[in-house]
Length: 133
Image (cartoon, rainbow, N blue to C red):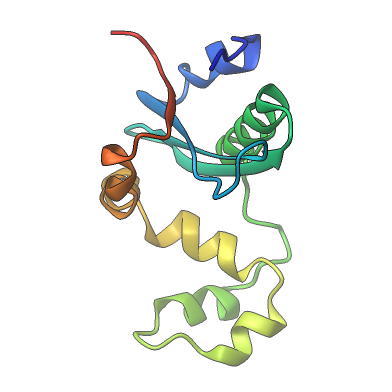
C-alpha cells in the first residue's frame, strides 16, 4: 500500500512523538483507517473510512489533528466538569452535555493510557504507516 505523504502528516510530528495508522477494515476494497498520535503534551485518535486508501488515511489524519486543536467550549460549566470527576458517570450528564465525551477524553486520559488501550493493534498485520526511524 502506498500512502501519499502530505504537509499535514509532516505537521503531525510537531505535536506528536509517535504517529501510527492501521487499516482495521473487515472487508477488501473498503479501508477503515485508525490513526493514533502520542506525545508528552498531545494525544489523539482519528478514524475514517473510504474505498480510496489515501482518502481514508487523510480523513483519519484530519480527525487526529483535530485533537491537537481541541478546546473546552466556553459554555462548559464547572457543574458539568464535576460530572466527569465522579467514580460513576452520571448517565444524565452524557445526554445533557454535548461535549461530555470529548471533555472526558481530554481531561481524564493521557498518552500512556491511549497507547495501552490500543496496544492490541501493534500485532496486527494491518499496520499501514509509521514514520521511519
